[in-house]
Image (cartoon, rainbow, N blue to C red):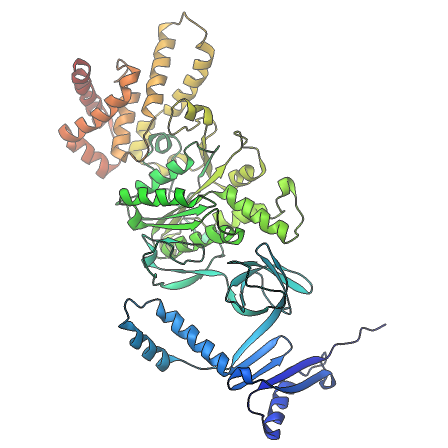
Length: 590
């Protein structure tokens, strides 16, 4: 039995009753626009209703499409136009100029919109019927003013995640398409500011003037637009720059259990970019607001906030805000990369991002898979991290270096999300709880950490100075296990163990004290030259700090040469070791 087609209702709401001639024009418009083979003229119903609440004008509703030419609609258009420029007002004196500009430039048009209705709302999710042409990722505008993003397209309805409280949304509330994909405002004025995932300032410093509007989802640069990674992104952390170097355009995962110093490494890296023409973006996902406030204050104390943007989707915010936060941060980073600048972006952390996405997916009734995550959770992070790249000169030569952070449970790197992100990134820095508890900070595990870019992202000086430090440390860890119960050791073994203890002590580094490339090279040259073997292990750190100060004061030409050349030869190496022996004589006597 053939299914009976429904009537297509057209309703004209008016204040002043139209004349018969005007009614005929309305009907002609409706028939010309909507009559087709699928919708014959006899199925179209036309009705005119008086509605004094409009104030003036009319509203024509045809199915889910609305043409608004009422006083109410025109007032709303003008209010929106004023709102776009209102945020640039600094004082009350600007009000008249804003109104004058808006009135002169205001172009009044009949508001045409696709409108649907809410069929279900709850837990930050709204299901809408009557929007068959809504696109995935499109922004929807609810009549209470809250925005949502289409996240699921079904046969007769779409499901949207809400960027705000759902308390004012009711079943039957009207929803309009905007035909715009989700995006954030971007611009140079965002530097030094703290914003939420929608790009709105939350630091109490007033509005931010954007340069343009970028979609939060964007294609990653193609292979032909990329360039190989060969320029170091110096972290200032000796253990990382010497053994697991990070290059500009690389994606290096920071992974470890809770409270092992993951954020500290990212923070030190941001602080170390001062004066190096690098823009930094820090994205906090699911963190406590107090934790982010302390981090912002720390950046301000080190004069690092002026070249940093903090995007905060705190733990108190809804899952949709935590879900879009890293994409919004990446769009800000892309704005600067496309201007030819180098950008460092930190995602802290993607474990909480995956949990927020899992919550949304389960509420959207998507089938759960491993650990209840949906099947596309790998794509969730791959499409984000693939946007980090180093562009070739034809594309401006900018870069985005990504430091995603993943939190493990009891050191389990084989869990679902850790293995996913490990396979996407170009290496990982694994922080070990046991080392952290023994006082080794940063607690980098030499065996499980790796950089797949390696020496390509090191200066010649660092590559030569680092030498065999990683192999020496690996041998030391193995030897330490086998000799811990032995009392009778030969001289060679004792020397190897002592050298390993000195290296481990040198790799300890306090929070907020990154070392320059020259300081790292001097430290490594002295250590690998065995010039501090007779310094007591307990005094190695004091010796290192004193030596660096001594070199800066008495051998400034060596430090300057390291900074300019970024390379060392045997002559410089010998001079550094001789200077270290001079200082050691004074240090041990004192």
